[in-house]
Amino acid sequence: MNILSIESSCDDTAAAVVKDGRTVLSSLVSSQIEMHAVYGGVVPEIASRKHVEAISGLAGRAVSDAGLTKADLDAVAVTYAPGLIGAVLVGVNFAKGAAMALGLPLIPVHHVRGHIAANYITHPELEPPFVCLCVSGGTTAIVDVKSYTDMAVLGGTRDDAAGECFDKVARVLGIGYPGGGPMDKLAQGGDDQKYDLPVGRVAGAELDLSFSGLKTASLNLIHNARQKGEELDLPAFAASFGRAVSASLVPRVMEAAKITGYGKIAVAGGVAANSRVRHDLEAASAKSGDKLFLPELNYCGDNAAMIGCQGYYEFLAGNRAGWDLNAYATRDISLG
Image 1: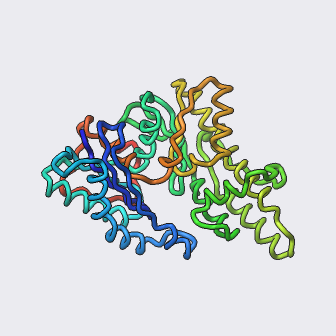
Image 2 (image 1 turned 90 degrees about the horizontal axis):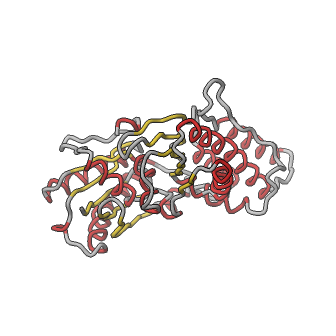
Image 3 (image 1 turned 120 degrees about the vertical axis):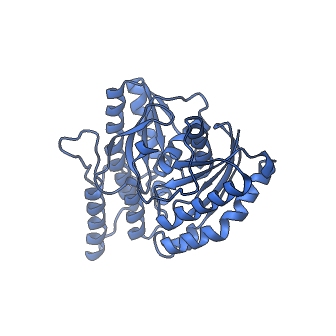
């Protein structure tokens, strides 16, 4: 089954063709990073307009790069939630038009479910059930993946997402947007014990997380150093920041793995590319005996291949959308 998949939930326009949920025939991403970097973050209106400009040509190229024609397609899958509402609408409306014109079924895909499915591409042997740490600029949650289409949030952030903290701190440091990559690179070789940054905890909710305190403490540290004319040890600060993020994420996902007893842990989302988080998860899972599944770095960020992968399993579960499919800025992952 060949699925044309579309992703436009934030600032990346993406199109792909995926066969039978696990084989990526083509995957293209049109990035807007340079445009948004000027503003230190994504400007929703600009993102939406750029999606409009790129999406049709990108989808056509995805089909041709896969060595197929439109007649070879069996369905169209699209991210319909969550995300920047204007950006998501562009993808949804294009996918509806494409599916209607080609006479194909339309498959709605939850963006975070797509990130989880990226692991199926990297690890064909992975099958539910398992616990997945979903961590990105907009999401930080521990998800119980009971089946390909039955999922529930076990714990999540009460305030900021981990990826958002990376972006905000990197912006204040002036090292680039998005901040995850520059912060990770800066941290290499830094003393991760030099700065005592807080690790957020939520009383009475052992699997929930909080990153607002870490973000505030980090920004205050940077501003205070500048006001006093003191030089901040940037590699040490970045390493200390990465340690604090990992110290919040890793113990909680390991606890979730212990509670569920699946013996399998996956990681998804942009922050899954962070070297400190990956290292600490590898060490913790080796100690616990849980099998760890990490996506390839090129499938950590937003892409349409992951949407096509999850779309296949949504299709098998009978999940189809009508021509009245709408976009949603927020939506519980359990609702599909």
